[in-house]
Length: 346
Image (cartoon, rainbow, N blue to C red; front, side):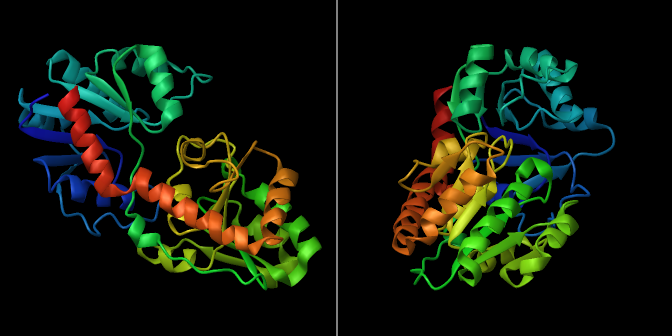
């Protein structure tokens, strides 16, 4: 469709989305409306690197809609979990202003009033961009609205590096929140088994913060020299930490997509992730560029960890495959091109 201006309403300026919007803003007349600047559990610095036109939502939001919502404007509503997103869908539908939805999979096993309301509103969207193949399939089956697969995109060159493990030391790495849903306790259980089998040959690097930090520190105290806890790491410093990893662990119990997995693969690490993670089913070809396992299976996680410890050369080959695959699927410049193609088609 033809439009003069593109407006995206999204949650907050996460670093990878800022990178994407910066690139998109060079191709179209773009304004991004951020619902908020940050959240207590997120320590991103919102002011860093924003080069696109943007607004932080506050005060009388109706004034913003009246000023910015024009007939020649196309809106992308990127999310459903906040009241501002639902209000935007209502307003745009009533005013007959074209809008599309861009979001992760909605959890149909939790059909709250909010979720039911969102699914009804989505039937008024011009199109839906599902973050991952599973999300796209779910939204199309539920709404019958034209749906496209459009995941998050990252600057893969920011993360890429490759070294050939010599087998003398193998490094496992996790990056994300230290919460139960992310499967970090399964990582600790699996690594303990691997450590008992291989001793000082293996190391575990844990990047992130959360309520399980102290628990993990206590559980790993007997082999603390092999476990490296970094706490929160600023986004621009992540690539340096990722250079220390050979194998990326992401055994999340549930993740709508999981950007950290794409980042780890872009860094050339071999991923071991769960099929309940959207990015895993999108990006991992089991046995070629990583391994996919069921959630809550620390013994199986340990099994694949040990397979790679026994074959360092396979780590190098599979890691190279992982980096190449993510560069093709999730590089920002490819994402911008794909999105502009979708917008012309709808």
